[in-house]
Amino acid sequence: MNPKHIILTLLLMLCPIGMAAQSTITRHKPKPAVTKPKPAAKPKAKPKAKPAPRRNSTHHSSSTSSTVSLSAELNKLINNMVYVSGGTFTMGATSEQGSDAFDDEKPTHSVTLSSYYICKYEVTQALWRAVMGSNPSNFKGDNLPVVWVSWNDCQTFINRLNSYTGRNFRLPTEAEWEFAARGGNYSRHYKYSGSNYIGDVAWYDDNSGNRTHPVGTKQPNELGLYDMSGNVWEWCSDWYGSYSSYSQSDPTGPNSGSNRVLRGGSWINNARYCRSSYRNGYAPGYCGYGLGLRLVLSQL
Image 1 (cartoon, rainbow, N blue to C red):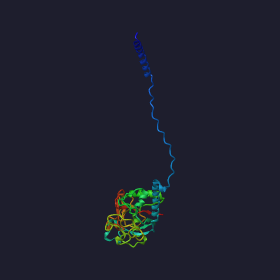
Image 2 (image 1 turned 90 degrees about the vertical axis):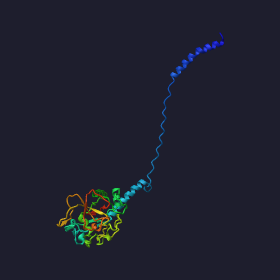
Image 3 (image 1 turned 45 degrees about the vertical axis):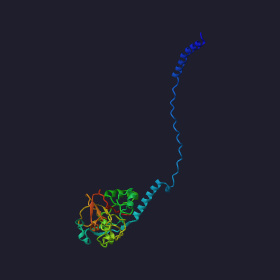
Image 4 (image 1 turned 120 degrees about the vertical axis):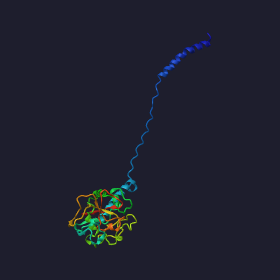
């Protein structure tokens, strides 16, 4: 046999064996392991930095500033409380009020009050914001009176203020407000609080420039109280009701009603509404750009 044929025959005989072997190897070749990438090693935690001094920390600085602001405002408030010695006065449309008086200011009647303290200024936006953390006023300024506060808002403010101070601040009764506006026992029987000339003591529609003004920038009355006439209306604690001619001691107004008393007039009102005996009343939920408040304490 030709040697070439022998070699070819041998190769043909070997091919099936090689293919079978290759097939066997392919079938039994293990599948490659599915290797998930190793998670990146967590970086070692850096040691926590010690808090920076408060003056260099925005967060702490803000917190401290807020605390200091509240403390400063509360100290100012206490220092600005004016003692009003108790006494007896005639409340309502007394002679100096003249023909400007309205029917609800009558009849005049005798009122006897115990001593109390009243703030020489209306509550400012700085004090309100320090206590409440917000400022509802449309005209902005730390020393401007707070406005857009309802009677109900005032109660929330006072409750929070009392929790901070441990004192019993409150709104004045209507009688306390009028007695103080008239100058208490030092009264000179002016038509407005501190003068017969409204421009001396009040920001009202003729001189306000259609806005509120910083507290204490007009002349004070006989007790050293500012803005009892004009600037902003001041809520009182009483329900609004009719007067009687009977003498009263420490009156607190009707037991119920639909409106709470407002006194003093405001920057948007004419002189007639800024008189010491003028009365107004609004629902306790009502607020507006001329409504504010002044605080009273029975005891320091």
